[in-house]
Length: 508
Figure 1 (cartoon, helix red, strand yellow):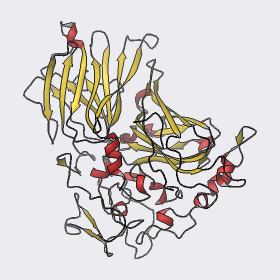
Figure 2 (tube, one colour):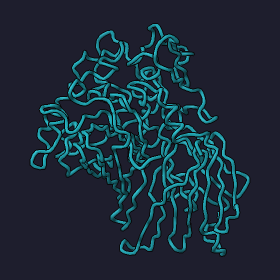
Figure 3 (cartoon, one colour):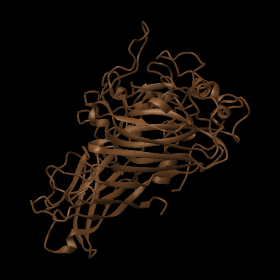
Figure 4 (tube, helix red, strand yellow):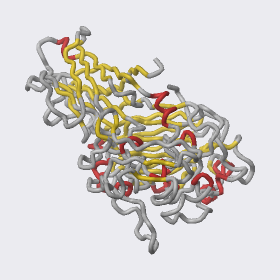
């Protein structure tokens, strides 16, 4: 864990029911950076927004995300720093559901073999109203860059970038078009944009250049909370992860690209650094005083173990990221075999790669955390088994329940706990069970509380506060926070606070 890094996970964004998400990105280094900004929807962590930010040395970029047309997330900024596309600076950018829609491209070349399939395509745009954000440093230039280079154009002259149009032009793919059949063109599948060339953005050399702050604001309710982001120092160090902006190059880099583009070989290092044995935090819940608590638990690598549609390049665990050659090996060519495919084209399936090739393989698992890897009929759901230990303020264990795989079922005790099952999960503690009302007005709320109809406002005041531990995650990387709210019925009287989780990591 670090306070700055080359990869950052903001564990939650929301635009639901009046909420906005504010982002502040700071380049703390004396070098120019190009940063990928990527938003993932909560359920299956498919992309809903992606673009790049060109940061000059010591530059700061700010933006806010709010509900736009159809309540889809819409990002706006008043910042002058260059973005790719540059239109974001004046027009903003809207989210998209393309990553889980059935059609990857409007047309396909005659006779081309297209690897696509969208098992979660039937689900509505409302699924993108909350999720999490990744910011990844793709490349770095020494100082402000050489005169006339792409990084130099992003730098300040009289307080504004020199030429954002030139910066955007530097990210056009100069290699051959992707034909949907052969390996992804360009050096390491980058598309060979000019910005990646000699004298422009090179490999990452600074281990902790990026500091990201995020705030959730609900003006109608009169509350705002700053939330803690997960910073990974040294992620991707020594690698050049710059890519072109067009399809399919915009799908990279990802958090798994620690060892190179179109690779999942870096997942082991991510798990070692952020894998959690347990998460602990406080809770407070009392309907009579308007007190309530939500926990956010985000599993930023879960999609590489569960979203494994081998023929869809937008899936995290597809053939394109799981062969041992750069850019992927398509179906039918030497070095890539799908166990059970095409006779059993539905998930789960594994990718088996050529043992003689350079890049380590990452098998798309048939199980994750002891549970079914991908539940195709359940909105991208893949249950994470967990054990819940609830304590009152006297630190006496009030409830303990082990939740295994499968649907949410009431345990024998008068305690109900919703198993984390998405990439981002919101756990509402004691705020009602059947409707599971949450502090964050989440649509994916999982309840934690009594299942016998008794509300949390017991006569014993000690049972209105306490702490909770969730463990047995099987060492899955996790990030999040708790948010407590006191609702007094008026925006000028309400308040809320965010509390960072306490983690017991693998290295502890």
